Image (cartoon, rainbow, N blue to C red):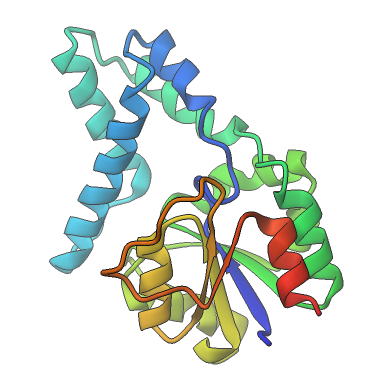
Length: 220
């Protein structure tokens, strides 16, 4: 049993597919989203590895500017801002609200922890009907270490006032699960796409297809 469930946000809770419309409107191929998002994570991880920090939006804007320039497009502030503002309008995956409601009703505290900005997701959570389930909405701007650095998870534990071993992280990203487990948390892998879990990472404590299944597994 756990006291606190920590949730990753981007892709774990939110469906990022609508962001492709913003890339297309900016003149970029829709598949650019995948390369761009991976590059944002890469650069955030790289800075954390050398003891430095940059905000998600700053890295996201720089890399989007680079994509626009490489495509021969003008990287105006308006264009970049329009694409990035799409994060504030993303839908939740359909399993998220019913699953989190059951977890909340079971008395498990729920917080979010994102490498992005917590403020960007407020309307997403409000529109998706889960804002009231969330005790805290946290991001890495305070510890200034991106997940999967252990300080990010320890920061969440400090805010919640519980030891890390009484917490679990739920995410679709194996690197996030691995980081949480190395920091002392349990790791719950949300495997919507039936993707084999990498053998190089520490195994999750639990693998489920979605949050409704997670609710059944941890609310007994």
